[in-house]
Amino acid sequence: MLYKTVGIIGAGAWGTALAINIARGGANVNLWSFDGEYARFDGVDMPGNLTVVRNPDDLANMDVWLLVTPASFCRETLQKFVNAYKSQPIIICTKGADNKTNEFMSEILTDVIPNCTDFGVLSGPQFAAEVASGAPTGSTLAGTPKVIEAGRAILNLAYLDETDDIIGTQIAGVGKNVAALISGFISVNIKSENERAMIFTLCCREIIKVGLALGAKIDTFTGLCGLGDLFLSATSRTSRNYAGGVAIANGEPLIGTIEGIFAYDTIITRARKLGVATPILTGMRNKMRI
Image 1 (cartoon, one colour):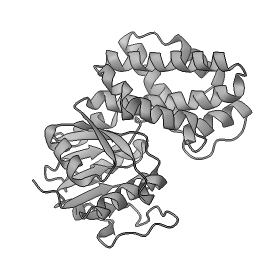
Image 2 (image 1 turned 90 degrees about the vertical axis):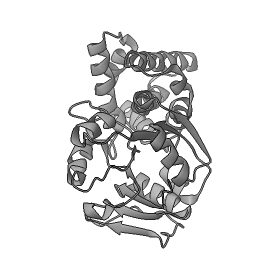
Image 3 (image 1 turned 180 degrees about the vertical axis):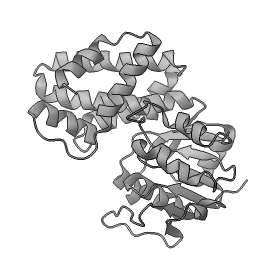
């Protein structure tokens, strides 16, 4: 099947960056924005085959959908699109979990649109501005064969790591937010480099244990959505979560949404339900007082 039209739900930085990337590849893109606004990047023009829309019905006849709405608004937003959905494959590009229910995005999607059987997740080391500017970027694409086919056709990224591990890819995305928050915090709070490395490693191991208990594959955590995204988010001050951890350690106000704070609750809550011990993660959370 040819995927010539793409509907993108969410016109924040990541949704707009993906829209620009896909439009550059030749597909016609309808970028849905709840208020008609969209992110802008310095030195980057919007392609002529990219249209910003406000009506969910404008996505009804698109060949594939990308879901790029903030995690906390995922359910509310998807409910607007139930009547417009025509069995297109859906690629979830939102990293995170619902901050009230601790649900992963795929769980919300299948609850709101139960007839959606072809869905997947795109996750990896992706700073939106760099994707918009055309910088080479690699990502993990997890999903059904139809989702993999669609992703290959529309995503103009440097490399796609392909897998069917949808849950693992999501846990890696949630977990790296926690790890980046911790990394920022201990970069200030702990002076010993040996101790920082120890704490960071043990926290990551506990996150992986939660993922494996949920059915994730170990290889997923060594891929772009795992090690790749972890390296990007946990070592760069450009990362909101790393910067958030630094701010917490310094007693400074937090700027913007820090996904790692909500992700922390998801990981700990899931671990308790699964009977997975997380003493290091729990201890660090108590130190951060979040």
